[in-house]
Length: 186
Image (tube, rainbow, N blue to C red; front, side):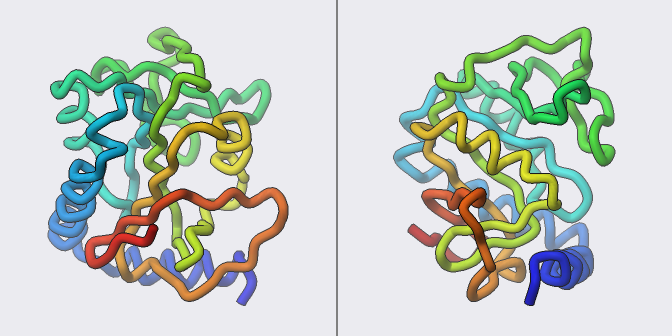
């Protein structure tokens, strides 16, 4: 199955998960993330603001900030059509950006050296057992991963969004670990 069709099919499955189950499963997934040594030992963490039926991350972002982690979030630089990162301070500093995803407001952007990011927690449409992902089709994360080769990458998704294999090419970068509500793939 090609990526476009797989994206469509998995999004339909993910969108059918109830809000209540999304919250329950998200808590399970993020508790597993918290339990990893890489998370415990990382100070500079890149997260994402969830939207739609993704693993819900908003409360986790706030919790990480309270735990004295330096949290950075992605935003899309429209002038270069690239993903960049900004320090997260508060959801009051956020607005709807690319695809309606919350991003740091332009006037609140605080650049952060991407080479200092130790851990990237990554969204997706789906992952496979080889830790490759299908995103939303623009390649933002794969291009960003290429600039952060030393950062450990954890992909998170619901177990329903795990597939046997994904077609990939030389531009696709796999994660180091995938965590679902039912398993951890290392």
